[in-house]
Image (cartoon, rainbow, N blue to C red; front, side, top):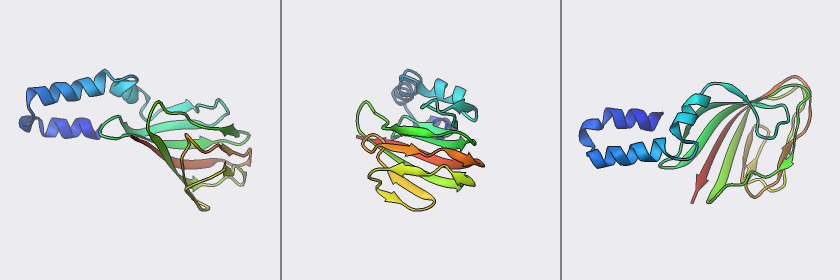
Length: 149
């Protein structure tokens, strides 16, 4: 969305070709800008179908592909060990724990880049990771992911 606002604010300095390139990159990309807008600020089931929910807060496909989610892990959910494959590039993810569960809901990662009580930086495409069962309370985190070529 910020890229869209940037283009709109600077429309007078862009050539027609640059606007067409921007439009093509945003609206014809697989999943694209329209799909991103449709999912913005809506709770959805998590990818692992394990009970956690995600809310897309921001994202872009250019100049760097990234996403920003608020994740909610309600009591009873857990995420089994897995990796998140990408088509190309190196996938990085920074998880910031906003609220820990009263019991359970611990992040498990084989080889994180950095890991503290509230900050988890890892390569989800290479490192198997999981979340233990949330036994009591809810767990919330801010999750920022990006792909570098």
